[in-house]
Image 1 (cartoon, helix red, strand yellow):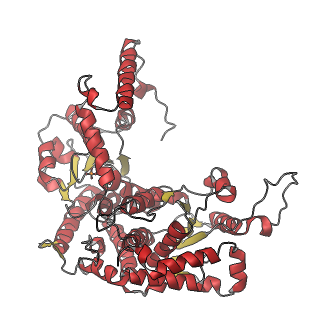
Image 2 (tube, protein in one colour; image 1 turned 30 degrees about the vertical axis):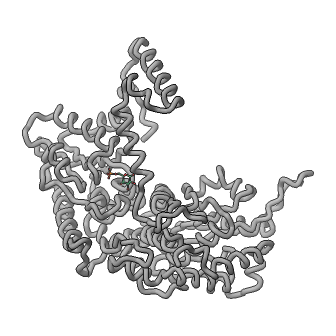
Length: 552
Ligand SMILES: O=P(O)(O)OC[C@H]1O[C@H](O)[C@H](O)[C@@H](O)[C@@H]1O
């Protein structure tokens, strides 16, 4: 039985949802004095309070029964063993990437635990050589800047965690990321760098993603322009790829190519070679702590009973809102500037894994799957879209992520108080606010509250706690896929984007554009016209030279 809607638990949950129709969250707290203890989970460095949600003990019990009906316990176990699930899915054993005991594990006859170990060893060697200044550029100077060229899972995880772990950086190497095909911006960056002390990491599983390869060619020309030594590319390029041959043909030395594997979707490669920029920033020891944090969450996920299992409970809450409350959105709200890029990472993880409409039997699903994930760092977001969270028409469950203390900065008291205030304001509306509103003749001031949220509280921001936090969301994606009976390891939609990009590169002539739809043809012709107009204009001064530095 894989279609969740045909389970008795699904029918029961629909009735329970109807019963909760007019319930107020504040009443749930009055009815159960132990609600905070009952609906919270302490998971090592991460504490999760989900009491401000529309759940009761019977609702949680039924959601857990739904999980069992969908064979979740067996699925979790099979994920860790790389065994097929009951719906036929062969899971990608991504927890193996941070399994320190390196239990032997094979995929299609390949021993992946030794692949992982060997690759980490090679990554450690490159990392230590660069950080210890053993690695030298073409003029024999050590590396001062590392520029990662990559997009999506090949770079965004490393970038977000590098940003979060800034205070842990123990050397002066500057780490930069370039993802988009924005030649002006890339040129601006290059104009501030020294070729002989810059190392490029071309991070691309396929080694063919258009924006990455365009930028890689610019970087290669730039290095070759500044040095005509035979070995310049050997000293200035590292490749991270599953396409070893293409990386070699590009000119990267075999010793400088780190593998990602065909079996691993790009978004998990942060835990392996695509984590190199992060390791270069914080060192291999800290990178190991990051893996160990994720491993601690993996062990919790594998070994904890469902009712106290953080990823399981949060995934079930998401299903409760998506399928029974018709919530189409979910906000990720970190109250920490360091976690500024984290919502994008969660967005990638949950929307790529669960943004599916075909089930494991190849049939269209007759229920909703992944809600839209968005969010930015608080407290600035309080002054932009929080208005809609308070008074809009949509139900938008939110995850507040807050850090009690940050390295260097110490106590995060101010941000913590703002998070507490917001979560309470969303739940209670204006009824608990000590300050009264100015009077108004209309009803548009009504602030009824009753907006659900979950609080994810971290004791401190560290490589370990960040590893736990990211692994938490990865497992949420897996649990939701089991309940929804969809494959979380594919991303055909993203692949289609790449195929279209490539085909448009080939179609740049007026002759071939006719195969496209009329709107696309019209826009193409408009672009060509404006491009021609621009060529007629007198040449402007070089913007790279004139640019002031307010973007950086
Ligand atoms: O690593 P590449 O082959 O360059 O692909 C880059 C990225 O492409 C897509 O966006 C995928 O969804 C990502 O997971 C992948 O990391």
